[in-house]
Length: 202
Ligand code: HEM
Image 1 (cartoon, rainbow, N blue to C red):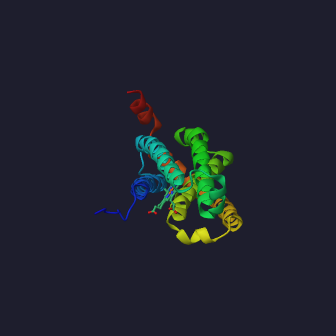
Image 2 (image 1 turned 90 degrees about the horizontal axis):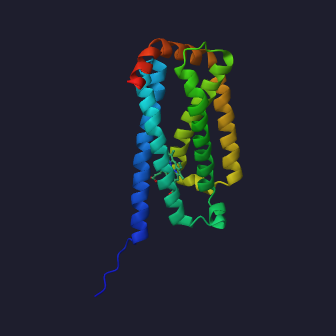
Image 3 (image 1 turned 180 degrees about the vertical axis):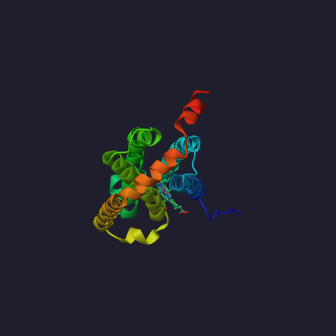
């Protein structure tokens, strides 16, 4: 008597990868959103921000590895198959922008945030735009992940909606620039930079 398994090994593998991907995304979102909240309320210390950034880099790397492994199982990276899946291409565009924006945050925005230099308009705009785009893209990546019906829409429509969403987020963050500036000044004043430098050196 031969027993046929109703779930193939590849399906089990995909399921485990998707589960790992889901857990990583939950951890990453929890960290991103609690860091955002901590910055707004002034309750996030410089040490905590430093640790959060470090862990988010690793979580994003895990999301890339598990996400690309799922895509490999589904399509073998065949361009023709990829082109047929509008939701997948949309997800790849959004996580690529998320990663590039993360690099900008890391290289340009965090040094401004951590320093004690006066916050002029240019620096405030940098923090507001990169910060709001980061939150948008983390939430969007999770939304695309769980939204099966999005796959029914053509890629052009998805990308157009995405562009409108990005522009609206940038305009919204610039409209709130005064508020952003006040929150950052408050956060800086409630977190003494000298104690942070002492912590990093020790
Ligand atoms: C960094 C590169 C990433 C890649 C290559 C990727 C790729 C994928 C793929 C291929 C799926 C399966 C989609 C399907 O079966 O229809 C998926 C699902 C998902 N992704 Fe991602 N993803 C990435 C990042 C993220 C991020 C940053 C988040 C959110 C913080 C996220 C959250 C999710 C969620 C919640 C699901 C649905 C899981 C489920 O079906 O239970 N992903 N992702």
